[in-house]
Structures are given as C-alpha cells and as structure tokens.
View 1 (cartoon, one colour):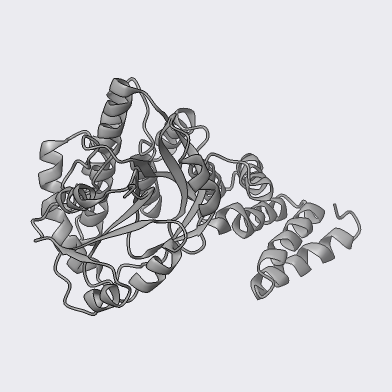
View 2: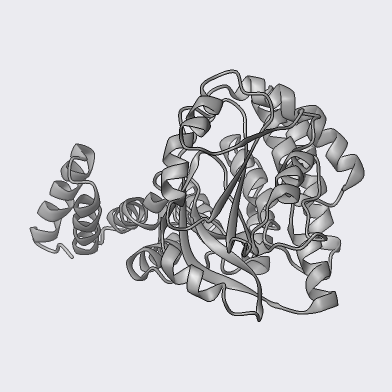
Length: 370
C-alpha cells in the first residue's frame, strides 16, 4: 500500500475541550493522524476512539522533543504536518496538497494566527518525513536545526505557503505552567545557552513570579547574545520588546534601547509602536506622528513583515487614536477629527472617541480652526 501523503502529528494531554475542533479541521488535508498521549485523564482517548484514531501512549519525561519525535517515528506519511490540539487548519489546504507533489520542496512555513485579534506570522509546520529530521530541545522544541542540516546535505527548497492556521487555546493556570516550565527552561539553557526565545520565556516567568530584576537580567543576556552574533534570527527582536515594555512601565531609561532596536529591526512594527508611545509620553507629538502613520498604513494595506505577530488594534484603531491625539495636542483639529472618524469606524461604540471627536470637530469649525 502506498504511503499516505501527509501525516499530521499531535502530542496531547487532557485536550478534550479542543481535540474535536482540531481533528475536524484536518479532514480532507491529513491522510494520517498520529496522536501521542502523555498522560490524559479526561475524555481525550474516548474522543479519538470515536473517530477510529489510534492513541499512542508515551510516558512524559519532561522532554517535549522526545514526545514529538515519538510521533514522528510512528508517522508513515511522505510529509509531516505538526499541529497542536488547540490549533485549527483554517484555509488553503487544497492548494498546499498540490504543492507537496513537487519533489524540489523540503519544507514549508505556514501562516499561524496565535490568538484572537492578532495578525498571522510565518512558522515552520510542514516538512518531508526523513528519519534525520527530528525536534531538538526539551522545551520550545525546534525542528529548524535538523531541517537546515538535512538541506545542506541533500538540498531542497524551504519556502512559505498560504496554509492558514489558528490557535484557540488560552492558558488556564499560568502559575502551574510556570512551575513546570521554569526547571525545564533552566535545564534547556544549560544545554543551549544561545536560544533567545528560552531567555525571553525565562524573563516572563521571573516577572510573573515577582522577580523583576531577574527578568531584566534574562532579557539583557539575550540582547548581548544577539549583539555578538553576525547573523540574525526570527526571535532576535523579542528581548528588546520585553525589556523596553517593562522599563516603560516603571519610567526606566529606554531611549537608547529603542533607537538600537529600530536600527537593528527596521521591519518590526512593534518598535514603531513603542517609539511613538515613548515620544507621546514626553509630549513630543510632532515627532510621534510618523511612527503611528507607519502603523496605520501597514494596517490599511496589509503589507508588512510577517515574521512576527502584532495586535490588530495596534495597526488599526490604536494607531488612528494616537494620531488623533497627536494632532489634537498640536491643535490640528481637522486632522484630529479625520483620525477620530477612522478610529470610530473600527470601534463605533467607543464613547470616549466620540466625545473627543466632537471637541475636535467644533474647534475645526471655529474661527481660526484648522
């Protein structure tokens, strides 16, 4: 019997809330579903059994890669599609299947929307099934090192494809997850001390557990790692984002960090937002306008770098609202009115915007108004 084209692999534990939705979304796309369970005590097994999907039990050993690689070892498909139970395939599946028949391709990044109200970003989720292509890392497991090593040895194109995915799960218990993840992160960083995402996750846990200075230290370690490297990676902007956001909440010194981030990551819109807010907080409204104009233009055109995910409101209503505020404070009443109108078109129930728009409109119509 011919091997299936696509094997979708999942590792699960107590996913009864999400599993049906995930499996429904795979119909017509995945030819085989490999479900590895690491210790469910809810109805996860029953839901899989009802669909005729075998459940492969795997004893949890504080190692996400081990569980995911167990699923890869079982998969018979020509291609591996990696998905979590709280994710869905939401579009583009039929076109992607046609692309997989081209032997020149090795892997594809797809568009994942990580949460409601966010823009999608590119993430590796689909690659040829080869024994040497396996996840690495006990947490924040990574397929890229093995994938690029295979590509260097055997060739093959890695590119983006318009397969759309959505993530619906939300953390129910951050405290419990943090208790589990903290020792894993510390162990992972001993093995791979240059993983930027791990340092940033460590910083967020320290912050949530009331250790802000340790969080700052983790972000700064990550920043120094990026500064020493001669090449760039997708996660590189993250420690600047985390540290700048935190320092802004306590009126820390962020001007130099902001300028460095804008120079290093000119396509990352998060720094335009942070710079604009920084300038507004210092009453430098004329200087802030260009940063918010850039965000508004990105939201209007949909043309921006998809290596990161952004809050949709940052590219829409919040960009317009801040532009309106800047022009209002500069007595540019007509421009303020126009931007309040654009903001209200996004969120028409915002009574605060209506009140400010009314003031700007009245001033624009007064003698000498502009």
